[in-house]
Amino acid sequence: MKSNRVFDVVGLLVVLAGLGIAAVKYPLLPDPMPSHWNAAGDVNGWMPRFWGVMIFPIIMAAIWLMFLVLPRISPRGFEMDPFVRAWGYLRVAFLAFMLYIEVIVLRAAQDQGKLSQGGLFVAVGILFVLMGNFLGKVTRNFFVGIRTPWTLANEEVWLRTHRLGGKCFVAAGFAVVVISLLGLGPWAMMAVILAAALVPVVYSYVIYRKLEGTAAARPAS
Image (tube, rainbow, N blue to C red):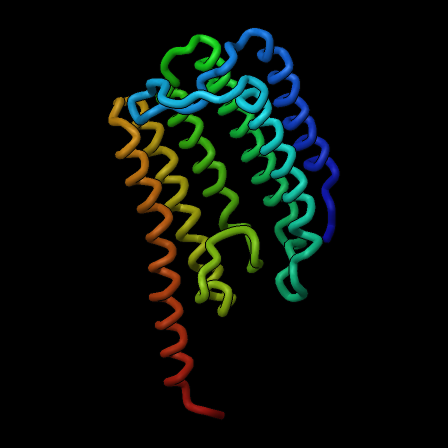
């Protein structure tokens, strides 16, 4: 696969930033430290400081490495070359999202107070808007996008599903930001995200059946 080294380097810099933040925060955090918050944002779980601080850099590094490997193991006929730039933006956006979550989690752990749900929701909303904008550029492959039996079986189904999916993700992203501003809580956010995920899946089946039925009805030449 064509490799865009700029995105590789930017992703690595985001991972290193996560490691740097962990190093700075480490002496400021209690041991054990808060590691889990309930739906109301209150602390309801603790873990040893080392693992509580290092979990984000470790996960980010593992994800960065996985992002490098996936294009190289993509089967023939499902290469990721056609959307290499979109793939680069998507992976950097996701790593940046993880970095932001690390910051708000460690801040809440340091203060031993509530986790900022508003800040979390806004970040989720922005991530969905970004994903939606690039989803339509993703061509058929086994690792990225809306991968149902019907999108993988038919190129036209893949294209139509991802055009709709991109719009659903953008709409869901803006809706999540509004939910955050109105303080409607996590259940409303989860309902919006679930709808954005399910609509394209159902659509992929419907459009597949429609296209296959049209093909079956076409007289043989």
